[in-house]
Length: 331
Ligand code: SF4
Ligand code: MG
Image (tube, rainbow, N blue to C red; front, side, top):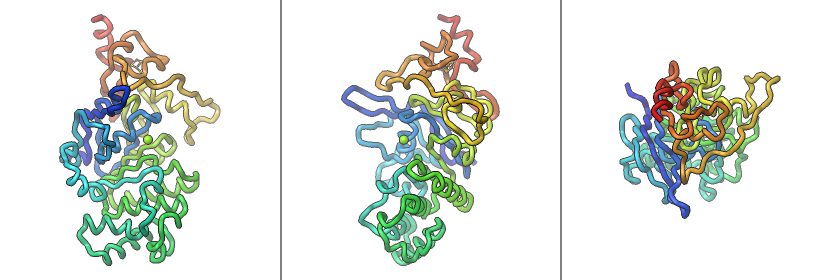
């Protein structure tokens, strides 16, 4: 069986007054059935744009320039909005950072859960509302039969995120995309929400793409990691490979720059100096070149390709590239 999701050479640009911003540049990765992958990287690296592209929820000024998004072999890039309406919420569930902006403030939460079920599963309102009560119970909301008649503002932040999870998983999608789902919540609530997502994933055999900047969450929840920098994938691999032997200098800096539970506490955190490149005019060579402590001559003008390192691990860095000497000498 093939992968549940396969993204090949995806390229997404935004038209701005200043010109074309190349937000996603030749991104490829896959998600296997039932696994959780993390997409990590600094803000503006293209993680959220990639997620929105998978759901075809890009703003008007954005354009998919190239590439394919295969969901069970079916290319979403070619789908019309009408077809996407049948896929979103049904095959792909979504959870965003701020549930208040994604929930409808004027509609009862029970109805918001039932809506997707009526649309995608062809069941009547009564059956859908019954199912909504069951979903609220599943996500751990007490007195679900009363709570379905309440509005989003009557729920706390953590409870609202549980409602979002209930909506996202009501139709038992094959893929759940969660973009910083717990960033707006307290640490204890965060842990509860993540645990809930993990439990439901096991019950429903859903795959998850988790977009986060929290490497502690990645270590705990995910099977594989995709590291993005300046609109590109610079490294990918299993959580163990990435955490124990990162191959790309950016991944290394990322691991050193944020606190993690599994970290040696005697070591100091080290911020990454400098800023990412301007994607209106991306550099010709390696995007990380100006910030990289290990940069070499070849890196400035030649962009490294994503190459096999070991096991599941791939990295785009000349340090590991078999052709490094040839490219350098060809100048
Ligand atoms: Fe650093 Fe060169 Fe690797 Fe880029 S290709 S990350 S500049 S060593
Ligand atoms: Mg984002």
